[in-house]
Image 1 (cartoon, rainbow, N blue to C red):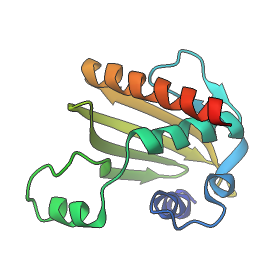
Image 2 (image 1 turned 120 degrees about the vertical axis):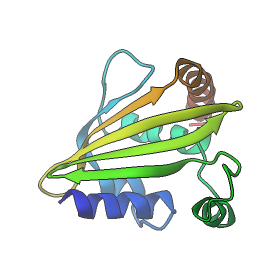
Image 3 (image 1 turned 90 degrees about the horizontal axis):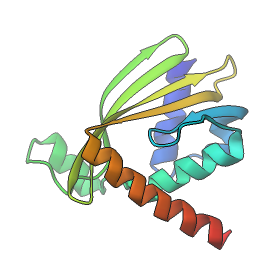
Image 4 (image 1 turned 90 degrees about the vertical axis):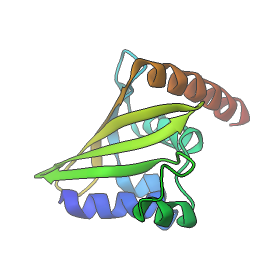
Length: 149
């Protein structure tokens, strides 16, 4: 089931999934942030965090993605998955990006239920300078999103 869920996740990242995160996330999903001590529970808060991350860690344009695949260098530092391990109901996706000029390396650990809905989303980031930069950017984006909503 995780293979189908990850195919939908990739569609969502490209903006091609009708229903978006509402289709992907279980109502009782739990989100584990690299900078917030307590787990964040429920679809609404998880959706908020993932949407903020999408704004804070934007992906590559198609030109940058093809340049990166050709090995032409690091490009603009846009978010991209570099490794993927799928096993049973769990996916581990390693990613790289740049925030505030700092290299960010991390993993998304995603678990789904038997219906393919994401029930757990855990993010881990390194190095410490990257965590601090992502924390600043995410805090600002969450504040902007919450005041606009």
